[in-house]
Length: 148
Image (cartoon, rainbow, N blue to C red; front, side, top):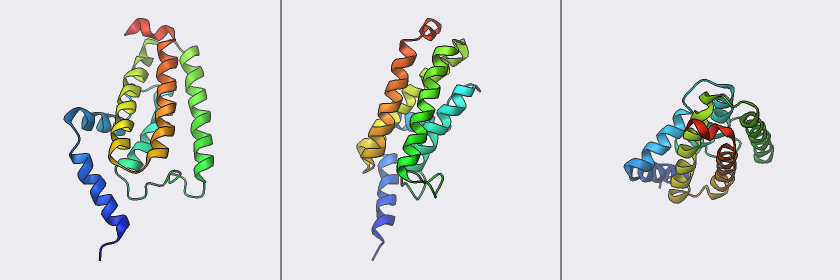
């Protein structure tokens, strides 16, 4: 008899392969991280890429896995702090290079929706989606949109 957890992992991988080309590309782009090497890009990669990678690829998809001794609650608190720092950085740093932030966040949003639709990690997806959409809104209200 197969382990239920193993079967869930195999089913998730099968479902990933069934995504539309566009949704699959969004997941891959979110896994890669943002274009451009900026401080904001590095923070975004920590906030979103690690979590998406864990949900889509890694064996242990529990929220908080990246630092095993931390609880899911402290992990979420860390994410919330980082999102606040990124939001402020978008206000303070109006560099055209930060247009990559918006581009990456659009991939993140689409990837989280695709993952949410094919798997059982709805709480994590809902939390991360809310953070991504908040940053997209902050970007759209900034002066950075003039570079689009």
